[in-house]
Image 1 (spheres, rainbow, N blue to C red):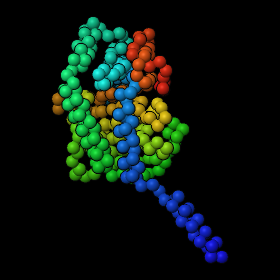
Image 2 (image 1 turned 120 degrees about the horizontal axis):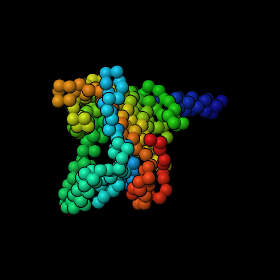
Image 3 (image 1 turned 90 degrees about the vertical axis):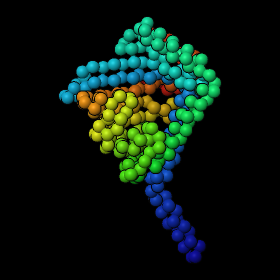
Image 4 (image 1 turned 45 degrees about the horizontal axis):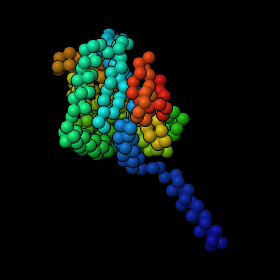
Length: 282
């Protein structure tokens, strides 16, 4: 009888442990670290980047549009954007000359300067990782299925008075929103945020205003490796503190392949690998 009672109590404790919700901050900590590790693996891949900027009217209609397609290749251990297409046409002679000059400069960069630059980038990345964890209070608000996989949903709310250290940390500390974390790989699969305080952003050479919207989606490109699929910033921005514009910036990534052979974009051959890890729609 005593043995049965012990077994019953043990079963009850196990059941309680299994139903205890996971700690939101621990999910956040693990997912931030995993996402940062995944992003570092991008230098192992060649991929296509489609960079689209739209200027919108007050009615939300597109007034002007600029689209560039580049392949990201590795030069001396550093990612380099090789322009493939601009507004539906091959690069102009002037654009090709600028690309050649940038490539030549990168190839000629002295090893000590490259080491110093990469060291600064690594320190900035580490500082940003700390900021993303410390700048927010995280709350687990549920679970959802994203692209057929179960994910935790975290609500991220900026901590009042937090002073970010990194350049980008100072921006994200003024955004609130939701983060979807893949349960299996504990990595970000989707982010949806809104700007709650204005901040300056070099992306537009303007001041991004309250109410602007930022989203990010990631895709599984290999076992346990998630990399960006799309980043969109739909911003109300004040240019030179005078004119207010609606700007939609969409960065799309596709065709992730391990470095080394070639892929094709609308008939143009560009450096990549022979077998795709993931093929995405633009």
